[in-house]
Image (tube, rainbow, N blue to C red):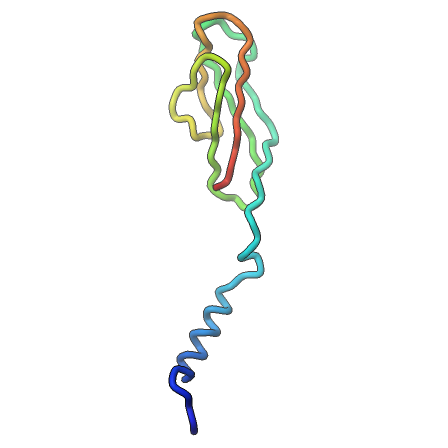
Length: 105
């Protein structure tokens, strides 16, 4: 039997395993998570009070999610990279906006 160097049975098996490990979804990009809700345990608070903010997210691929919380005043208490965070109202009264961005990567 004539065999060319590098094309033995082991080489064919290795190529087959590499092809079998591939998935049709291998090159599909991750879809962005979808925010389905944002709730606060209190919507009116006194200066310095603490509020629990919770975001609900639907993620098609069940990946690790990252959360980026921001506010126009007051401060978030660690940890911040979570679906549920604590926000401490500013010492000055007023209206403040809490925002969250959720990503999967």
